[in-house]
Length: 316
Image (cartoon, rainbow, N blue to C red; front, side, top):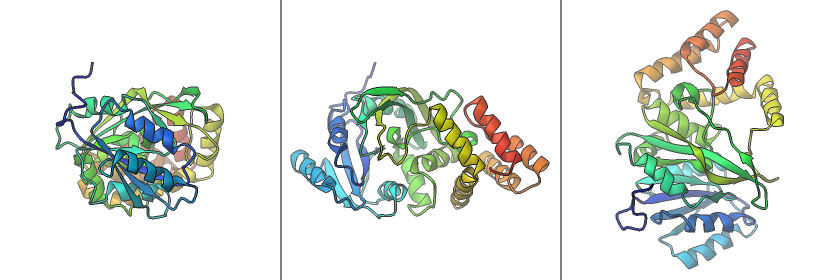
């Protein structure tokens, strides 16, 4: 049972960071789902990366209807979705108690913000905190086709070093977490904004909550930049990526980005970072021993077998 009065004037305000690019087809449903939230104290900050399909007209129409205090529209950096999300995350004009990422083609469950805030408000405001959840996969017509994985192991830095578990479209985080991300800056070269947030918050002593309830209807369609990954075919694709060196490339990028904020990591996580980083370049036996000693892990048994295999063949 939610105890917060979501319509009250003292309800915490949420800045919704919405990135768009050629999103005219599904964007109205996403904005309508935000308007329908049980929690009403929110504002949308939309950053468009150069759409030419009518996306800006959609945003303009909603701004005219809802008012500029509810929707602000900005020009994105035109350097890809990661740079776009980080540009909003670090934008000095955007200030709120909580922040939520939003993709242009999803549909939020009506209690998404309310549920996230119920969890986050239990954590002291000076402690960086991140909420994420499962998603409900739907097709282009919003017909349900499945659920994302339920990760049962603790979400922490040891896991974040080798796995991203929370979709950015489910993420809500407090201002303490946002200040960490601003310190890191919006020009870090990382693989995905959501994985980066997970690493930073968990690494710097923050609290990460993974909700087993689905908060977003995650649309699967031909234009997805990132889609669901629970099928057997997706598993084979991940194995091919590991064998092809993609995981190693991702880890190289993530570790380089983390190096820039290493002093912000807890002492325990600085040690984990060093052990994992140094082990990757050693001989096979020392490499495997060091990576196991570091304590990094994935959420599933098969995932951890893959981690060991990647380590053995120097693909980590």
